[in-house]
Image (cartoon, rainbow, N blue to C red; front, side):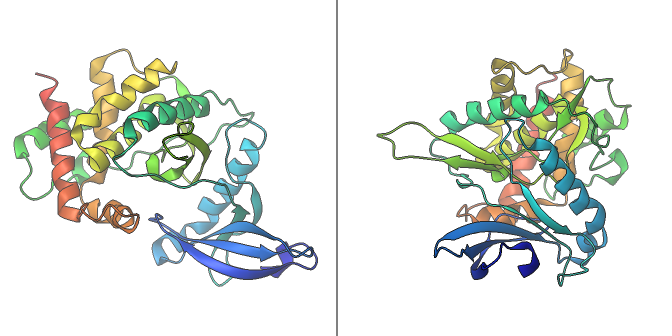
Length: 303
């Protein structure tokens, strides 16, 4: 690690950052020659499954972070990447540290949702010289197993929706994992200015695909974090911010369900970092119940 620091610098402190699902994140405090400090962030793939795929994942993210430099979309800057663990114990990416913090609280959500929507519109307007890879679906109709106690009829109908061919779409630059846990905010006291976004992190899954898919992913996360009543608000805010979604309701439903059904069987993975962030009421079971309510609400909207 020291080879990537400036002359006379050294690591003086490390702090685990909570919220990651696939990787371990640490903030490294670097002591500088003039007696000051600066921070860097280290992403490390420790889990054997993700470590096996780390070379592609880390090289891709480092490339995306380089591409985002100077675009107006604030993201970490790449410092160094060791995708095969040639120099580190595990495959790792070292990047700059952004100010701000993730905010998953119920309080202030009404003010944050439009900011999230405007940020996503800005991401979708990017037109890089070289497109990222085409998006990958995170589930298939045959792979979905509904949670215990779920509305089996609603889930069967939902699975039938994503069994159909994907609708045609106009491609956009996708973050692909855009949700409140990957957006940093500066939240001043209520008596001062409102919240503002200071950056967007976790660009491992960046790809090219329909704007609806990014909107669907954030909508699912909002429904699980704050209740299914939020299922429509984010899409509305996205369009209010100038974003364009599929014209047909059936196409919007396809992308929403393609994302939501991918959470089936994985509620424990998203619930854990949310509890670590202070949302202790979001047990695996609670998240499964909200997912069932969300999928059921999407299907009820058809009729």
